[in-house]
Length: 266
Length: 295
Figure 1 (spheres, chains in turn red, cyan):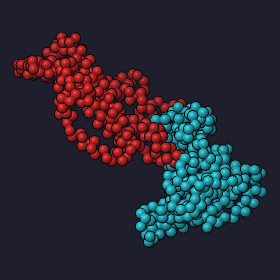
Figure 2: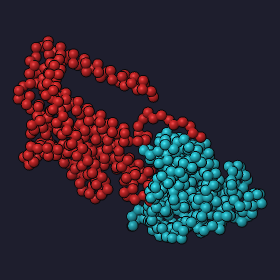
Figure 3: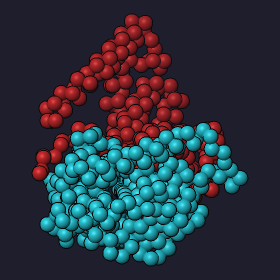
Figure 4: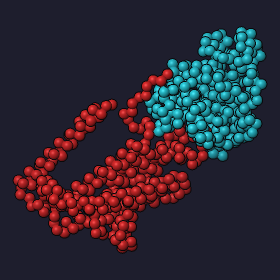
């Protein structure tokens, strides 16, 4: 598969949604102008674009601050999720005791816990990281545990027959086998973590996109809120792509398509 | 319990026909016993309602001997392997390797499963050294050996390929090389060719025959393919239907090195007819037995 065909294929799958978005924007712009809708209710795309370019420099700091918070929270949350998954998988008794509780805990809305965490831990970095960790950890833990549990039976049987220890089976079979599942959990966690960071900033911060949104809300600057939303979407996408890139580098072998066949070597 | 069928006369005729008596199977008859099963029993199910699967199986694999187990489907052949591999603990009897009891002990055998079971994230050469890696032999040390045997198995050029790029037959050859490179003396092969089509299968049999005669490892081979067993083995154990025990022990008289052509010799055909008869009989008995047997 050459670069040319890759680009071609990408272009072909890219243009229909692109045109759809363009049409939607045009419709939006036309509707706002035609019905004379006030900017503080619904700004037109052109107004939002103007505002974005105008306040870009002042938004850069907020964006960086949110990105930093997101990355720290995502890293810690994913690490905790992975550790919990490994521990529960290797200790079946612990899993049967805690797994139902883990599922149940997801019914507690993390966002509702945020104010409580602010009261307990103040307005510093810690409570915000805890919020993101709580949001991230669940998809990572569950997808990793499912990945471990779905290990190929014939491979498992082979490892047992040749006398591999429990830890060897985990390290050499179950863990690499679960990597694709783990990465789909990480992708979900990546987008969640941006949301977690923004919500944490809503509740108490002096910097960041979430803080910026709260500020603009009280000033009825709807256009600026839209700019903030655009930034959040961009951040989510960026993290999602980052995780996908890491997956491409880490996951080896048959699960990736588009491999060239090696030459016949007889 | 086990009977030696016409061993002497077969051996005699074979010797006179073949100019290479050194390679004939009688060399392994005097060899020390590698694996011995002595009255091994195993039941599944509950204590009050046990379901006997293995009922007093005794057999021997000598050093450098190729031994096949054939029996009707459902005769507990795979259970027998799990017992030898130590995944299951026998209810009675002894499993001895080099004279030492290994009941319920793992890590004494090389194994080739029915499906290739190559790890998709490892290259072929990384797959092939897996058994050695598990047994603590450093990877770099094994790779030279691995490359040599991969070349012998027609896998050179595919050392750094991933399993999904290989055909079914090639994957199975890689799986065999993995078992061959195992540091343990005994190789257990569990119906390794059953997933292949007829053409691939006979090609693989010829290949296995060739490579085994070069290495002379002790092999225990499960199959339900009578010709395959006759072609490859020094000794064949015929298992009965469930609960299984050894019905017959046959010493295969054909000298080594063997060629596929022996499959057309009258001796081969006679043995095949005999074995087919027993197998059919067992299959019939076990079919009738499942309905009527009270536990």
